[in-house]
Length: 315
Image (cartoon, rainbow, N blue to C red; front, side, top):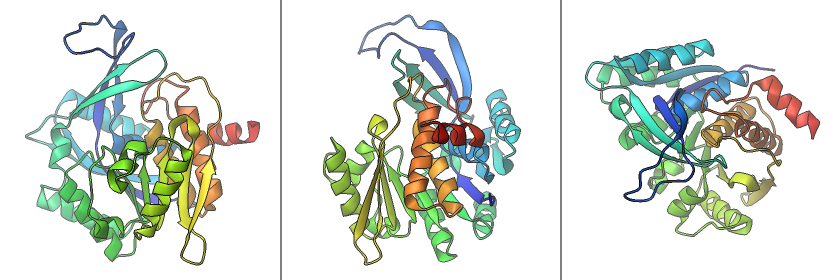
């Protein structure tokens, strides 16, 4: 299995997780179940760990604060053999933190305090080093928990040196069409797809239509994730028209959906950079993310390559 040299530029957060009986409403005070759990997270870091555990060689670029959380976040990445030489310890801002309310069925509500993540790209020497590293990467993976202008500049830099860009449009923000056209893969959920297309995505057929619309805007591959319904991928059919692939998700016991989307992004990127066909890459990513939701925690619940392979062969 060839290794992929993948560069992730994105967020690192310490997740503070509280189990609650339901999502609180305005003015309500809830008693959480058990103790507060601290687990490393952040979309960028989660995706980096997902890829490392699936066999890729990964470099992570970002910022943490000079606080205990920052040290823990760096240590967690290093434990998964991720190159952290492009992560800067910020002297002005604290590390990013995510406050997560986890309900019994595994769903959650998340509030992020970005901290040092919102200074990625504002340090000239740091961003220059990241630009230099892009040319050496097999792929660049981005999300939107760092400044939008930094993401746009990184996409352009990678496009200019013909390095494929995978963008997870989360949290949802609109991007200009000319920026989206520089992507190799756009990954969105139902809400993010609706934001870009202007059309609600309520079911599988909506997802097919929206994926086709976005593909026809000049994006090489568009993936819409649909939770328990799996995902839809729009890719070229060889004649310039969209070919739509749907991969259902296997039924699993859901424990925690935190980072399921990040696991999907990481697994799809690894599979595509290994040269897997779109159908196989999509199935690999769906089964990896299905495994993730059976375990607690963002990074702590991410599966290994061996676990995903075993799961694929068991069904």
